[in-house]
Image 1 (cartoon, rainbow, N blue to C red):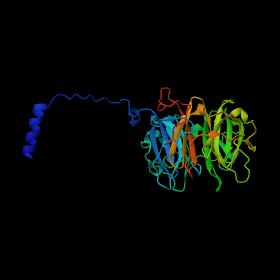
Image 2: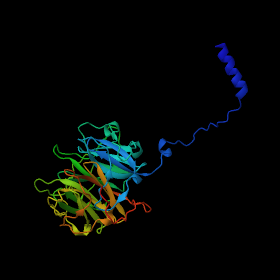
Image 3: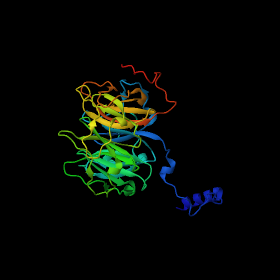
Image 4: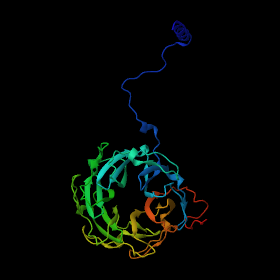
Length: 362
């Protein structure tokens, strides 16, 4: 110990000088978020609950009808169920089929390559094992001037002020009170002046004013949004401000189309609605309905993990009672599971192809 003390004393005498680091009290605090770049990413979630984020630039744009690229590695019994765009500094609000809400930051989602499997959501959220994630919303901030609009599988709809979810603990928060057989399907953010369109798997759609639904408490059960026929169920909900907005409607067999919101006549909530797509064996049931712009790109993903990104303007605008055009060529037994609308980058390369041409199949 004497030798150690001697060596330390020698080092002090040789290198010791006045402190150079300035210690400042009451300095502005910063978090790890300040050191993370705010960039657009694609978040994918599989049926068995694996999640990842991938840089948006990793998905190249192709022409309509192309074969696509591998989008996610998966086990034989698993498949990608949800895909959407967000920014790393946004919040992710997870809504489960049992009507509970959980929240994390997008940068807390593990980053992975395009064909990576991802990480289990169970490691990120403290939810019950019996709950299944059915809707995810990227949110920048919370305020009293916006609302959360929710729709269930059995056609119930509900509106809650967004600020009600400003504080969500690790155990989650109740978003809607559900019957035992009902499940939460669609969740959207609105400003109180939107038109709401609820679409079903059997090709029906009901459009009504958001003002037809009053704001309720989190634990309320909601009101009737659409009158469903036997065997039908809700698959999507759209909330838009423009009556001339275009909607993309996609069938499970890879066919889709764009249709103007004007084609869906305005009714009251709780109506049966009108036909949204002419369903045949070739189209299959409706998978999703989403609002799109001509400057957007459409990302389509199948249960087999195939993903294709294409310009929305290449998808034909046609009427309600039509089948649509082929969006992606599927393998035998494969089907569309989800779609996402992403912002197109102006200078993005299209792999040497014109955006209006189909990608060449292998």
